[in-house]
Amino acid sequence: MSYNNVLFESHNGITTITINRPKKLNALNKETINELHDAFDTADRDKNTKVIIVTGSGEKAFVAGADISEFANFSVEEGKKLAANGQKILFDFVENLSTPVIAAVNGFALGGGLELAMACHFRIASDNAKLGLPEVSLGVIPGYGGTQRLPQLIGKGRAMEMIMTAGMIDANKALNYGLVNHVTSLEELLPLCEKIALKILNNSSVAIGAAVHAINANFKDGVNGFEVEVNEFGKCFGTEDFTEGTTAFLEKRKADFPGN
Ligand code: COA
Image 1 (cartoon, protein in one colour):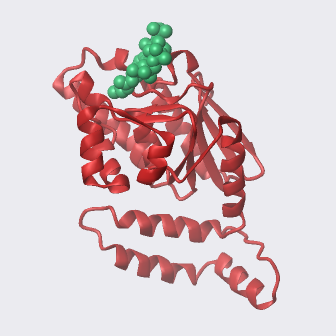
Image 2 (spheres, helix red, strand yellow):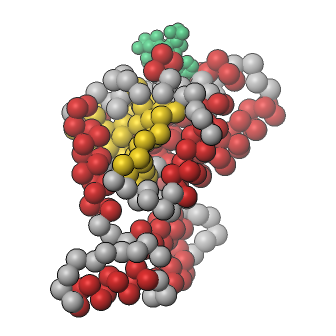
Protein backbone atom coordinates (compact mmCIF):
# COMPACT_ATOMS: atom_id res chain seq x y z
CA MET A 1 0.00 0.00 0.00
CA SER A 2 1.30 3.47 -0.79
CA TYR A 3 0.61 6.20 1.73
CA ASN A 4 -0.43 9.84 1.37
CA ASN A 5 -0.10 10.77 5.05
CA VAL A 6 2.39 8.34 6.53
CA LEU A 7 6.13 7.86 6.06
CA PHE A 8 7.55 4.39 6.66
CA GLU A 9 11.24 3.74 7.14
CA SER A 10 13.08 0.64 8.39
CA HIS A 11 16.71 0.17 9.33
CA ASN A 12 18.67 -1.98 11.78
CA GLY A 13 15.57 -3.69 13.18
CA ILE A 14 13.71 -0.42 13.85
CA THR A 15 10.75 0.78 11.78
CA THR A 16 9.84 4.43 12.15
CA ILE A 17 6.29 5.41 11.22
CA THR A 18 5.86 9.17 10.80
CA ILE A 19 2.43 10.76 10.61
CA ASN A 20 2.90 13.26 7.83
CA ARG A 21 0.21 15.96 7.61
CA PRO A 22 2.23 18.82 9.13
CA LYS A 23 -0.02 21.55 7.69
CA LYS A 24 -2.90 20.07 9.71
CA LEU A 25 -0.63 19.37 12.68
CA ASN A 26 -0.83 15.67 11.75
CA ALA A 27 -4.54 15.48 12.67
CA LEU A 28 -5.93 11.98 12.24
CA ASN A 29 -8.41 11.88 9.38
CA LYS A 30 -9.96 8.63 8.20
CA GLU A 31 -7.36 8.09 5.49
CA THR A 32 -4.49 8.55 7.96
CA ILE A 33 -6.06 6.11 10.42
CA ASN A 34 -6.40 3.51 7.66
CA GLU A 35 -2.85 4.10 6.51
CA LEU A 36 -1.55 3.87 10.06
CA HIS A 37 -3.34 0.54 10.50
CA ASP A 38 -1.63 -0.78 7.40
CA ALA A 39 1.77 0.63 8.41
CA PHE A 40 1.64 -0.88 11.92
CA ASP A 41 0.39 -4.19 10.54
CA THR A 42 3.16 -4.28 7.92
CA ALA A 43 5.84 -3.46 10.50
CA ASP A 44 4.51 -6.03 12.96
CA ARG A 45 4.50 -8.77 10.31
CA ASP A 46 8.02 -7.91 9.17
CA LYS A 47 10.39 -10.40 10.80
CA ASN A 48 13.21 -7.84 10.62
CA THR A 49 11.31 -5.18 12.57
CA LYS A 50 11.96 -5.62 16.27
CA VAL A 51 10.82 -2.19 17.48
CA ILE A 52 8.40 0.36 16.03
CA ILE A 53 8.75 4.10 16.72
CA VAL A 54 5.82 6.37 15.86
CA THR A 55 6.24 10.12 15.63
CA GLY A 56 4.82 13.21 13.94
CA SER A 57 6.22 15.17 11.04
CA GLY A 58 7.58 18.66 11.67
CA GLU A 59 8.63 20.36 14.88
CA LYS A 60 5.26 21.38 16.21
CA ALA A 61 3.01 18.37 16.60
CA PHE A 62 2.95 14.67 17.25
CA VAL A 63 -0.78 14.65 16.44
CA ALA A 64 -3.20 17.53 17.27
CA GLY A 65 -6.15 15.17 17.51
CA ALA A 66 -8.77 13.53 15.38
CA ASP A 67 -9.57 15.64 12.32
CA ILE A 68 -12.39 17.84 13.61
CA SER A 69 -13.45 18.86 10.09
CA GLU A 70 -14.38 15.25 9.30
CA PHE A 71 -16.80 14.60 12.16
CA ALA A 72 -18.32 18.02 12.86
CA ASN A 73 -21.61 17.01 11.18
CA PHE A 74 -21.82 13.41 12.36
CA SER A 75 -24.99 11.83 13.79
CA VAL A 76 -25.10 9.76 17.00
CA GLU A 77 -24.71 6.52 15.02
CA GLU A 78 -21.86 7.91 12.92
CA GLY A 79 -20.11 9.11 16.09
CA LYS A 80 -20.35 5.66 17.65
CA LYS A 81 -19.07 4.03 14.50
CA LEU A 82 -16.15 6.49 14.28
CA ALA A 83 -14.98 5.63 17.80
CA ALA A 84 -15.57 1.87 17.48
CA ASN A 85 -13.79 1.55 14.17
CA GLY A 86 -10.86 3.75 15.23
CA GLN A 87 -10.41 1.80 18.47
CA LYS A 88 -10.48 -1.48 16.58
CA ILE A 89 -8.16 -0.73 13.69
CA LEU A 90 -5.68 1.62 15.34
CA PHE A 91 -5.73 2.17 19.09
CA ASP A 92 -6.49 -1.34 20.41
CA PHE A 93 -4.58 -2.75 17.47
CA VAL A 94 -1.38 -0.89 18.42
CA GLU A 95 -1.74 -1.66 22.12
CA ASN A 96 -1.97 -5.38 21.40
CA LEU A 97 0.87 -5.67 18.90
CA SER A 98 3.60 -8.02 20.04
CA THR A 99 6.28 -5.78 18.49
CA PRO A 100 7.20 -3.02 20.98
CA VAL A 101 5.83 0.38 19.97
CA ILE A 102 7.42 3.58 21.31
CA ALA A 103 5.68 6.93 20.86
CA ALA A 104 8.16 9.75 20.18
CA VAL A 105 5.99 12.70 21.21
CA ASN A 106 7.51 15.65 19.37
CA GLY A 107 5.03 18.45 20.12
CA PHE A 108 1.26 18.69 20.56
CA ALA A 109 -0.31 15.34 21.49
CA LEU A 110 -3.95 16.29 21.85
CA GLY A 111 -7.15 14.26 21.76
CA GLY A 112 -6.63 11.35 19.38
CA GLY A 113 -2.91 12.21 19.38
CA LEU A 114 -2.54 11.62 23.10
CA GLU A 115 -4.81 8.59 22.74
CA LEU A 116 -2.48 7.18 20.08
CA ALA A 117 0.56 7.86 22.27
CA MET A 118 -1.21 6.15 25.19
CA ALA A 119 -2.02 3.10 23.05
CA CYS A 120 1.73 2.72 22.38
CA HIS A 121 3.69 0.57 24.82
CA PHE A 122 5.52 3.58 26.25
CA ARG A 123 6.16 7.23 25.48
CA ILE A 124 9.15 9.56 25.25
CA ALA A 125 8.60 13.30 24.84
CA SER A 126 10.56 16.28 23.61
CA ASP A 127 10.61 19.27 25.94
CA ASN A 128 8.25 21.27 23.67
CA ALA A 129 5.51 18.62 23.96
CA LYS A 130 2.06 19.60 25.19
CA LEU A 131 -0.34 16.82 26.06
CA GLY A 132 -4.07 16.90 26.70
CA LEU A 133 -7.54 15.58 26.01
CA PRO A 134 -9.46 18.73 25.01
CA GLU A 135 -12.57 16.94 23.72
CA VAL A 136 -15.04 18.35 26.27
CA SER A 137 -14.17 21.82 24.98
CA LEU A 138 -15.72 20.63 21.70
CA GLY A 139 -18.78 19.11 23.36
CA VAL A 140 -17.62 15.54 23.01
CA ILE A 141 -15.52 13.09 25.06
CA PRO A 142 -12.35 11.18 24.16
CA GLY A 143 -13.50 8.31 21.94
CA TYR A 144 -10.31 6.49 21.08
CA GLY A 145 -9.75 4.96 24.52
CA GLY A 146 -8.71 8.15 26.33
CA THR A 147 -11.18 7.81 29.21
CA GLN A 148 -9.78 4.34 29.89
CA ARG A 149 -6.04 4.62 29.25
CA LEU A 150 -5.43 8.04 30.85
CA PRO A 151 -6.62 6.89 34.33
CA GLN A 152 -4.67 3.64 33.87
CA LEU A 153 -1.51 5.62 33.27
CA ILE A 154 -1.80 8.61 35.62
CA GLY A 155 -4.57 7.71 38.09
CA LYS A 156 -8.25 8.56 38.20
CA GLY A 157 -8.11 11.97 39.90
CA ARG A 158 -5.49 13.42 37.58
CA ALA A 159 -7.29 11.98 34.54
CA MET A 160 -10.60 13.47 35.72
CA GLU A 161 -8.94 16.89 36.08
CA MET A 162 -7.20 16.74 32.70
CA ILE A 163 -10.36 15.63 30.89
CA MET A 164 -12.72 18.02 32.73
CA THR A 165 -10.50 21.08 32.29
CA ALA A 166 -9.59 20.16 28.69
CA GLY A 167 -6.19 21.60 29.62
CA MET A 168 -2.73 20.75 28.34
CA ILE A 169 0.21 19.65 30.47
CA ASP A 170 3.81 20.20 29.50
CA ALA A 171 6.42 17.48 29.04
CA ASN A 172 7.84 17.78 32.55
CA LYS A 173 4.44 17.47 34.17
CA ALA A 174 3.75 14.47 31.92
CA LEU A 175 7.02 12.98 33.19
CA ASN A 176 6.02 13.69 36.76
CA TYR A 177 2.62 12.04 36.13
CA GLY A 178 4.26 8.96 34.59
CA LEU A 179 2.55 9.64 31.29
CA VAL A 180 5.92 9.73 29.52
CA ASN A 181 9.05 7.84 30.57
CA HIS A 182 11.69 10.40 29.50
CA VAL A 183 11.92 14.00 28.36
CA THR A 184 14.66 15.24 26.09
CA SER A 185 15.34 17.97 23.53
CA LEU A 186 13.60 17.79 20.17
CA GLU A 187 16.94 17.04 18.46
CA GLU A 188 17.64 14.18 20.85
CA LEU A 189 14.14 12.69 20.75
CA LEU A 190 14.58 10.14 17.95
CA PRO A 191 18.19 9.31 18.93
CA LEU A 192 17.01 8.57 22.50
CA CYS A 193 14.13 6.41 21.21
CA GLU A 194 16.61 4.53 19.01
CA LYS A 195 19.03 4.10 21.90
CA ILE A 196 16.27 2.50 23.98
CA ALA A 197 15.11 0.47 20.96
CA LEU A 198 18.64 -0.93 20.61
CA LYS A 199 18.50 -2.19 24.20
CA ILE A 200 15.21 -3.92 23.38
CA LEU A 201 16.72 -5.42 20.21
CA ASN A 202 19.23 -7.42 22.27
CA ASN A 203 16.42 -9.41 23.85
CA SER A 204 14.11 -12.19 22.70
CA SER A 205 11.33 -10.74 20.54
CA VAL A 206 9.22 -13.82 21.30
CA ALA A 207 9.55 -13.30 25.05
CA ILE A 208 8.84 -9.58 24.66
CA GLY A 209 5.63 -10.37 22.75
CA ALA A 210 4.60 -12.75 25.53
CA ALA A 211 5.34 -10.07 28.15
CA VAL A 212 3.22 -7.50 26.28
CA HIS A 213 0.34 -9.98 26.19
CA ALA A 214 0.65 -10.70 29.92
CA ILE A 215 1.01 -7.03 30.92
CA ASN A 216 -2.00 -6.02 28.82
CA ALA A 217 -4.04 -8.80 30.45
CA ASN A 218 -3.87 -6.80 33.68
CA PHE A 219 -6.05 -4.15 32.05
CA LYS A 220 -8.64 -6.39 30.41
CA ASP A 221 -11.99 -6.94 32.11
CA GLY A 222 -12.75 -10.52 33.06
CA VAL A 223 -9.23 -11.72 32.30
CA ASN A 224 -7.01 -13.15 35.02
CA GLY A 225 -3.61 -11.64 34.28
CA PHE A 226 -1.82 -14.08 36.58
CA GLU A 227 -3.24 -16.99 34.58
CA VAL A 228 -2.20 -15.35 31.33
CA GLU A 229 1.28 -14.89 32.79
CA VAL A 230 1.48 -18.57 33.79
CA ASN A 231 0.47 -19.64 30.26
CA GLU A 232 2.82 -17.23 28.52
CA PHE A 233 5.66 -18.21 30.87
CA GLY A 234 5.10 -21.88 30.07
CA LYS A 235 4.94 -21.27 26.33
CA CYS A 236 8.37 -19.61 26.43
CA PHE A 237 9.89 -22.97 27.40
CA GLY A 238 8.92 -24.32 23.98
CA THR A 239 10.68 -21.57 22.00
CA GLU A 240 14.04 -21.57 20.25
CA ASP A 241 14.71 -18.18 21.84
CA PHE A 242 14.50 -19.76 25.31
CA THR A 243 16.92 -22.50 24.33
CA GLU A 244 19.32 -19.94 22.89
CA GLY A 245 18.97 -17.52 25.82
CA THR A 246 19.63 -20.09 28.51
CA THR A 247 22.35 -21.88 26.52
CA ALA A 248 24.15 -18.59 25.83
CA PHE A 249 24.03 -17.71 29.52
CA LEU A 250 25.50 -21.06 30.53
CA GLU A 251 28.16 -20.79 27.81
CA LYS A 252 28.96 -17.25 28.99
CA ARG A 253 28.32 -15.68 25.60
CA LYS A 254 25.89 -13.12 24.23
CA ALA A 255 22.61 -14.65 23.04
CA ASP A 256 21.82 -14.50 19.34
CA PHE A 257 18.05 -14.94 19.35
CA PRO A 258 16.49 -16.55 16.26
CA GLY A 259 13.12 -14.91 17.04
CA ASN A 260 11.14 -18.15 17.13
N1 COA B 1 -8.47 18.70 13.30
C1 COA B 1 -8.45 19.35 12.12
N2 COA B 1 -7.56 20.31 11.84
C2 COA B 1 -6.69 20.66 12.78
C3 COA B 1 -6.66 20.03 14.04
C4 COA B 1 -7.59 19.02 14.28
N3 COA B 1 -7.63 18.34 15.43
N4 COA B 1 -5.68 20.60 14.79
C5 COA B 1 -5.11 21.53 14.01
N5 COA B 1 -5.72 21.58 12.80
C6 COA B 1 -5.41 22.45 11.67
C7 COA B 1 -5.95 23.87 11.88
O1 COA B 1 -7.32 23.92 11.53
C8 COA B 1 -5.06 24.63 10.94
O2 COA B 1 -5.52 24.44 9.62
P1 COA B 1 -5.63 25.70 8.59
O3 COA B 1 -4.21 26.22 8.50
O4 COA B 1 -6.11 25.07 7.33
O5 COA B 1 -6.55 26.67 9.22
C9 COA B 1 -3.72 23.94 11.06
O6 COA B 1 -4.01 22.63 11.56
C10 COA B 1 -2.77 24.62 12.02
O7 COA B 1 -3.42 24.76 13.28
P2 COA B 1 -3.57 26.15 14.07
O8 COA B 1 -4.75 26.05 14.96
O9 COA B 1 -3.54 27.30 13.10
O10 COA B 1 -2.21 26.16 14.91
P3 COA B 1 -1.96 26.91 16.29
O11 COA B 1 -0.49 26.81 16.54
O12 COA B 1 -2.59 28.25 16.30
O13 COA B 1 -2.74 26.03 17.40
C11 COA B 1 -3.41 23.97 18.48
C12 COA B 1 -2.31 24.72 17.68
C13 COA B 1 -2.99 22.52 18.59
C14 COA B 1 -3.54 24.59 19.88
C15 COA B 1 -4.77 24.10 17.71
O14 COA B 1 -4.56 23.70 16.35
C16 COA B 1 -5.87 23.22 18.26
O15 COA B 1 -6.45 23.55 19.29
N6 COA B 1 -6.20 22.12 17.57
C17 COA B 1 -7.29 21.25 17.94
C18 COA B 1 -6.91 20.40 19.13
C19 COA B 1 -8.08 19.52 19.56
O16 COA B 1 -9.10 19.98 20.05
N7 COA B 1 -7.93 18.20 19.38
C20 COA B 1 -8.91 17.24 19.78
C21 COA B 1 -9.77 16.86 18.64
S1 COA B 1 -11.01 15.71 19.17
